[in-house]
Amino acid sequence: MLRQFVNSMIGGFAVLALCVGLRAQTAPPQQPEAAKNRKAAPAPRRDLSGIWGPEDTMEGISPRGVKTHAPFTAFGENIANNVYKPGDGPRRVPIGLVNDPLDSCDPAGFPRDLLFELRPFQVVQTSSKLLMAYQYQQVWRVIWKDGRELPKDPDSRWYGYSVGKWADDYTFVVQTVGTDERTWLDNAGDPHSGDMRVEETYHRVDHDTVELTVKIDDPKIYTEPWLARDKMRLKLLPENTEIMEMICAPTEAEEYKKSLANPLSK
Amino acid sequence: MRNKVLGVFIAAACFLAIAVQLPAHHGAAGYDMEKQLVMKATVTDWLWANPHCFLRYDTTDDKGEIAHWTVEVSNPVDMTKRGWSKHSLNPGDQVTVTVRPARNGAPIGQLLKVVLPNGQTLMGWTTTVR
Image 1 (spheres, rainbow over the protein chains, first blue to last red):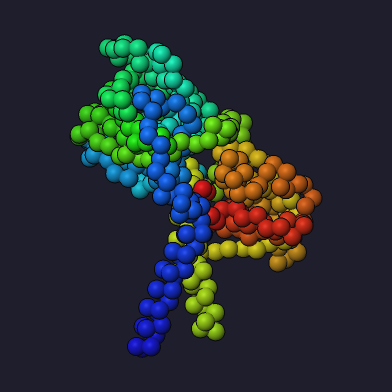
Image 2 (cartoon, chains in turn blue, purple):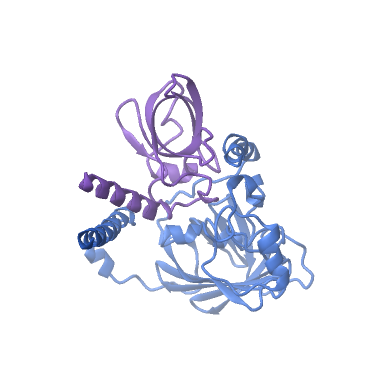
């Protein structure tokens, strides 16, 4: 009995050790020591131009949704538990029962494009706006920085209406309203209302690094404001990085449903 | 015998530990995470598409009857990073597939790896995309 127990413990530790080793093999390639220790160039002032990607790919993708969120209101809880049927996260359902609008190629919308499948995106900066072009679903959004105010009664848009300004030379803060309530907040089926206000903070730490923080303020759904991303690190990618095509085509989505999702749910 | 059992246990546990990191729009709830099937297969179709690429193939079961399977991997962007392309598989290719099957017994699964006619192995739904 004791020998069996000891063998089980040895086996358990072996599993841990081997798994750590295998995870290291699938981890991003480590920089050489000299490159790691080299100090990054200082950040340019008031400039987010370039192609950025999450330092941690899986964190950018976030298949299971946000790590934590503020408590739901009763209204929000009803939507989360009874209306939305997500394919992943704590309330996930079998694939055939998923009613995620992404399955039908609806736009991911904002801020889901920051909270799910955040892949490389390009920032182009002009005198009046920032243009952000995202790999996932190959969409772009405009962030006005010409001093205009947010609309008081915004139209509902898949990607909302955004204005931003520099809080200091290295921190750009964006406010967004007017998001379409049909979009989900993330891949776990966390909801949002059309009254949600989202604040993004892009803090350029150095030449190659931005920290992204996303704050959700939606009193209809959540009892208090909360951070959906908290200083998530984005790295500056080489200028010739290809932003690959990731488009949801309804015909392909339909084929997938017919061939896999529906038979899997029987 | 005991060493063999321990080895299988270690491999299965590690596979599960890594598998939970797979990027996907939906989870793997419909698939049997404890089971893997290895099949000799003839490719009938290879769809390079979003949200997931998928492979259709024919295989002969224990009774000698032909079964038609459909198995999925990730999207083209992720698969490109793993060395796949739209030309990786072609109708008529004789391959060996390792599949995580559906729980409900349908001929559907997640493609874990495929050995191509030239002997090359392509890994499917096993490792985290970086």
